[in-house]
Image (cartoon, rainbow, N blue to C red):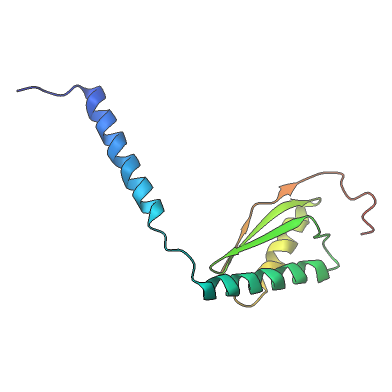
Length: 114
């Protein structure tokens, strides 16, 4: 009887785990037309809320929504802007959660009129 080497066993385990991970990711159901419309509506309202808030310069914040989960991207200039943006986004009806993917850029407030 042949006993497989530990390297082959490890390779087989990694291959099986990779295949399972790929299958799990590929089974996400696509959004329905109604979900896409609802997400676009939420994104518009979040963007409007951010732009209307005088406490944050939000022109460089990108908003994307997937099934009610808001993703905030782009960049801000103050640490507090992270909190303000998250609070503003979370205050919009229909938002389930907020994911902050923004970057902090220091010294960018000059000339913004803020």
